[in-house]
Image (cartoon, rainbow, N blue to C red; front, top):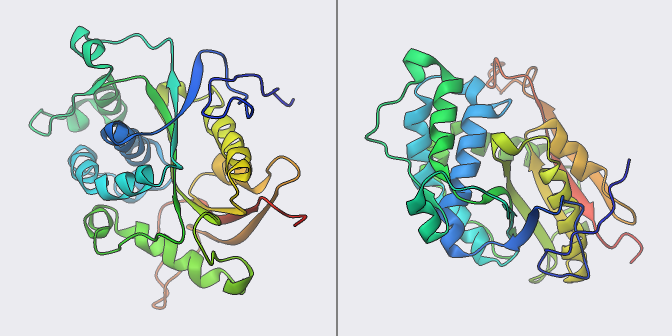
Length: 286
């Protein structure tokens, strides 16, 4: 059943969202960077179908390293002005000191992890309790004509070695003529990079509602296309099946269970996930 777009708590009220009334969509600002990074890192390293399978040990240590390493990627996208987040307007702060400043992240790499003694779920919950802020879901983007500096991406790629490999494989499998879709100027093709929702808010349809709102918002702002790499079935489905009149196409994909490198090695074993690159044409009739 299609949920009507009636929530006007968005940057452009003429483009309402389908989210429940307790949620608002806001453009992310630099002050939200650490919160957004924490949501992305926590969601991916603990609950992704890929990363905790590939890197099952010392997750908490990698969480802290990745949080610092992700700052360039997150900040680059927030600076673009096309990165948005879902805020819970009924959020109840866990600590008075958080409420005083509008929200706070309490992660401390000097604290002892319970990962080994109580398990990953307990450690995930411990760190989630320290994410005391109303931002609950994010969709980060940047202008493809203002590309990432991969030297600055180095620290994050060191934390997640398969991250760069995923993008390389998808690029190699993408058979499109670059001239048919790549941007020739600013404000043409948006690159999405980082879709994450806090664990306790899963099931609220925040990812899909934010994604469909963003497609319409980008269209209104003059963008002609959005490209996103998806490491989760639901994300891939949402972007490959946009609302009309938009057209979503899976332009490349591979299965981590069967993909082999030049040496015949299954580099993603034992992960079992189809990873896709999706392009959404926002002006299919143009």
